[in-house]
Image (cartoon, rainbow, N blue to C red):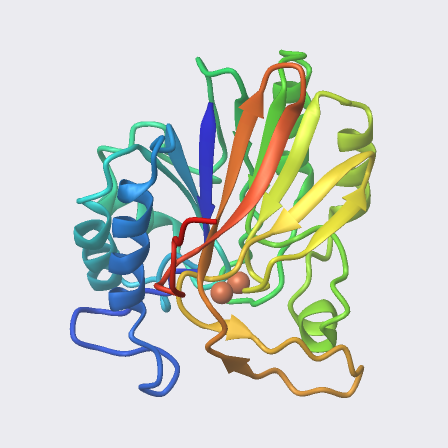
Length: 265
Ligand SMILES: [Fe+2]
Ligand SMILES: [Fe+2]
């Protein structure tokens, strides 16, 4: 089984650029979709871990839907801090895995890996949280199966060293209980997150937590505790997770764009 992970597509209404006119997020997503479609073997499915759009409007979700339409494999969406639950589930009504009300949490069954989606959104806020209801749901879902499992959520449950993200936009309430729940389930292979617009891996709660670059703009890597939050144009990428019997889940970073090659050795 091959799983692709992309994130932070930040789609605006058609014809509008993001971040004060600097980022053509739609063109970037179109390139990401073409990149995923051209992979051999093709991923079985794609996880899109939030900040799907920039301001949570129906027009943005309609634009996102048009941009994802050429994708040759199923996409599983979760909200980030830039999203809004009801416009998301309304525009993507045919994505039957999305609950009709409440938090946008769900499981994906029937594959070699079980997928469990968590919703860390706090409407109108940049930080995330996992309240008792969301964590009780997770606890109950994880009790159902000892199958190899991937958890995916927008806000990472760890500090990154990028100060403004950790201090102002981190996962607040619920991170400690989440760690206790995850630690009880050694079948959790990865916790996959977005939000940081960079590739980061951490040993966390007995498993590996990882983020992925944005399909568009990247946060500046500056570990100075006084650094302001800025962005730039390091290469976009998708992560690929291949389940290899006898080895387990192997991760790769697949850069989107033409960097020369392939040349024969
Ligand atoms: Fe983002
Ligand atoms: Fe975010």
